[in-house]
Image (cartoon, rainbow, N blue to C red):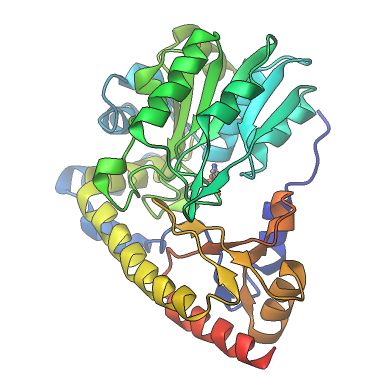
Length: 371
Ligand SMILES: Cc1ncc(COP(=O)(O)O)c(C=O)c1O
């Protein structure tokens, strides 16, 4: 398969380890190994100390699958396949799609969620959001209008990267009812789940509600452990699960043994881990609310409902590309302009899961004063 470059990953490759300040990351402040091990109970600590560095079980460490299954209502350890999150998207698209299929995907978005389908020879319709009372909303009526006779797969990502949008429970029910009614497979990217600012907004996993849904989750975002490269696919469709597991023999075969144990430690300490991350996000969101209130002439702020990222609009005359380039070159602060998401608006992705956000924002403010 020939595939287009992944623009976001290429952009990060350019700046992630050279720009002193990242104001656009999508993870939460990553843990150090020491901090994570301090959260591990005696049983997990023993597993870590005696870890055998051989190949691991292809489906994933049974204890990890058991702990991960506890995050769902109906999903059992047998319904899970441990892998790297990005690998999960790659495998699922290859398994679920055939050339010529029609796919609907939320847009703008994480590029692999629509790019892989295109590269596999599918046609992709973009389900675009609307602004409603300064909230970003994916309108289910718009989705209904996109479904065709030959639609095979509906791809969505809630909480959404890059806007932080999250449907209401009623909208979500309608989306899944539509999928069931029209016999569609669903790929639900749930990487930012558990980062809802109001816990009542948390949606069930699509894999719990709909047997033909494949859901993606992992420890990269909500659990602040992107360097472990651990995530999983969940589906109750056993035929699809068998195909997913079989495809993995051609990607990584099995996961990294140390990463599986460390992910297990994080899941077992989930209350502390999620509380820590939501505290960082909450503090940063207050800072951002004040910042955008003071700079309403320059930016349009749409407060997200969940996650670590938002997609504000830049209203300045120079345009968002030039603004982001000037900021990183003059102040060493990296933002991601809309073009990196193939999006034509003047928006940029802002990430607020890291502790140094106030410092980076102060530099941004200084830059605005010098424009
Ligand atoms: C929506 C979404 N899905 C999947 C991924 C892939 O996660 P990972 O980088 O841990 O493979 C990301 C990462 O940014 C993401 O934002």
